[in-house]
Length: 459
Image (tube, rainbow, N blue to C red; front, side):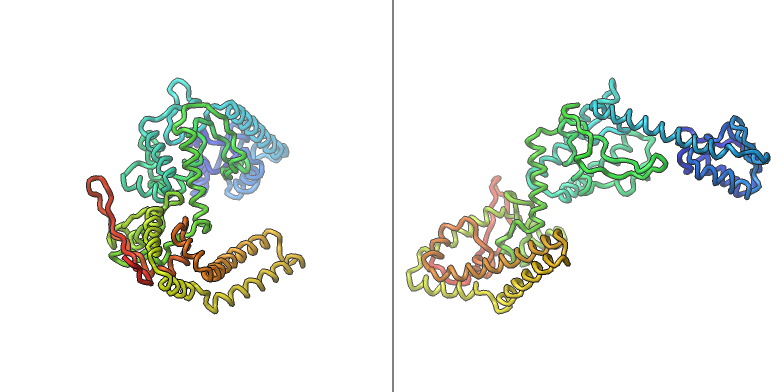
């Protein structure tokens, strides 16, 4: 005789430790009789319960008895058993609905009902439904928001925390609750960009309760679907905030700006012009405006094993470049005319670029025809139209820049007071700009920048 028990596991699922042991014993031929108090003890899914009692157990020559329901597979009169299984499932469904309703009521009242407090918080010892700041992890959360506000990407923040060997939320939870197995968090041991993004978006760090972020597809299974943020249950000012509103907004605004950078809203004017003075690899951007810096591309891709960082503030380099260009003010009229002629030749669109403009005009005409003919959806039409118009606008801008060089006085004035120098104009003036590794002497950064102009400039 053996006893199999599943404490604390819902009967709506058959993936239960005790039940799995029972089935294994049946498969091994060790059991010929199964005795339960009633049918609900076997399970509350009427389809699977019926499958076991009507098909599986008889096929294995196992007698099944449910005492209170007077069900005995050796007796011919078991007609009510299927109906009892349906009722048992309905009871489970109703119970699940009531529990969910109770939880939602608590969430709307601002009570925290999670098993574990969010990273940066801990449960109040006097009220398990109230959050208080965790002094061990709250400073780390605050630092994450500060780094994001200053333009650090989620990936770089995660990298920094991992390098400092700071425990990730999953690891910290296992350290705090020894009964949890770290092996269950194999994929979550290290900090990741997605973990950082979740922290930055979570209103809980502003002192607001944010729950109801997911929903089960059915009370019968454990499949959980994430809900969009507008469907979360958010109650304001339920506990002490880790970050102030201004910092929270700055950090999330920085994330939006970085997304814009990926969508090419920011144009690096020094692309293919600014290079590392040591390895001569192109300088690459890090961060988002107004906190963009340039770094050696080799260092960014491969680390310090290849080259050093060569960090330089984008705006500082722009200002230095503007000062260099102002030297053209010292040229006499003949020299200016010669330089402008060379600039116009440098900037002139190639035959290929002119052909591409004509091709884009034809593509846009075709898109409109396909859209009005109904062969192209409105959404797809807008996506393609935006893409091709952006490319055409860039080429048209280049052509316009060339046309403007005809007005020598205008281009001369632009050189002197340019607020933002375009990539085309910088490329016309400079073959390259070499950036050396900076040094910090007396708490003041010193860095050498070497400009290689295409034209001679008076000293």
